[in-house]
Amino acid sequence: MKTKHGGWREEYRQDEEHDAYALRKKPPEPTRCPGCGAVFTAGRWTWKAAPADAHELICPACHRIRDRYPAGYVRLSGAFFDAHRDEILRLIRHCEEREKAEHPLERIMAIEDVDGGTQVTTTGIHLARVIGEAVQAAYKGDADFQYNREDKLLRVNWSR
Image (cartoon, rainbow, N blue to C red; front, side, top):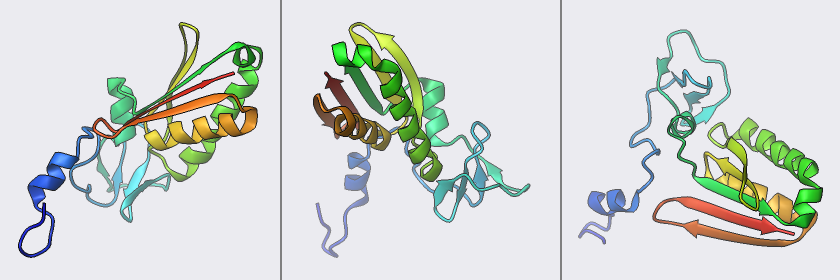
């Protein structure tokens, strides 16, 4: 909904934002997360060293981990997965290392055996998508990506 001046009304933007873990405003710079050590500087979270006088605030990823509230779910199943589980999980860990180095808020929360397969939970939808695409590209099989825009949640189901 536009106002007479062409700008978006503040209420509309707030209604569109449903991610309880997204910060409502930028923290002061620099801010260090006491949980993981990530530093908010130059408008983003990084792995730079924090100065001694940095503010402290739990980052959104550590907040999700503490609350056990993932943004991404990757479910892996099938006879091929069972036979190549360790190899596929190494690929998944490599995806996390690569993404986390550049984007500190993208992390694996847990890798758990669930009924009929294995489930990987992530702090962000981006990492879940990267994992799903990497497994699909490397091993083919059937992949299904379901994004829930309202909850900012991605579910990936892969089987082979």
